[in-house]
Amino acid sequence: MYIEAIINDLTEMSLFHKNDLNYTRLTGGTTSCIYLLSNRNNDSRYIVKLNDPQVLEPEAFFLNFYNKINLLPTLLFTERSFKYLVYPFIPGDTTYVRNNKKNILVSLVKQLINNYQSYSNAPGWGWVDDLSNSWTDFLISRITEANKTLDSYLNKKDHNLILSIINNTSRMTFQRDPFLLHGDCGVHNFIFNKSKLHGVIDPTPVFGNPLYDLIYAFCSSPDNLTKETICSAVNHLKFSQYHDPRILFEEVLVGLYLRLATCIRHHPEDLHEYLLAWKYWTELIESI
Image (cartoon, rainbow, N blue to C red; front, top):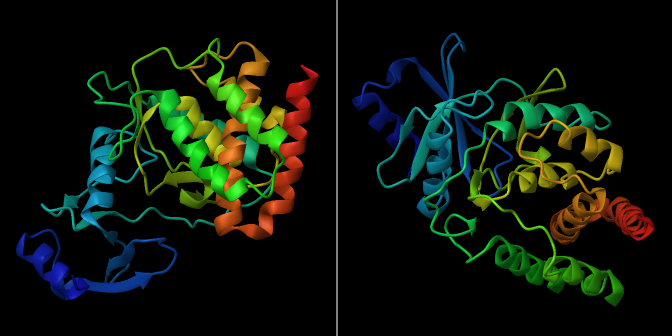
């Protein structure tokens, strides 16, 4: 669908005045086509996001469910067949400044994750559009997929360690109803304004444990992957049930394993730092 046709549709619905709008295509969307609409004075700006309806429908579901959370975009319009979404432009940019991770994660917990709600009628766990029977099944499916990428980068002991964590029958799995999570809660989807967290965009919703989004964010960049960084954020997490450090550290190691696979596929330049972090966390768990 061409942006001119979308603008015509939005004008006919009296959402905007066509003669007062300019548009610019933005770069950076992984699979989405994103346009910035602005009026002549540039004091009102909006995002039009186009993608496959199978991608945008879960995103709209998440944003509508959490329409009171200030850190998330407020949907102004959803095309009825989910071909595109419209929401206000969030001022700032996606430039992540290293060495500020501890403060960013605390802000993420306070402003987003602590506002998550359980979804008692969830039909399953994991990806909203590709459900699993349990939280453990979802993690196993992700680990199995990651293993295909990591097989030649980690040794057998590393792979077995992750499997032993997930398959441990005494492991504390999430005991509550699943929560609706962002699912792709990494620094690549954060909007920063003056180096402070100002917005979180592009959800790929998941039914699961709120800690998943926090660990995802923690592992989404290779800097400051230390126990002090994650523990400072977990201390503010109101859903925390991880009083035993080893349990928390094992959850981090699972998240780091998944991130290693993503790094190899999309950000190989970060691999050395992630492998150092892997060594740090495996030795930390062994020392407990």
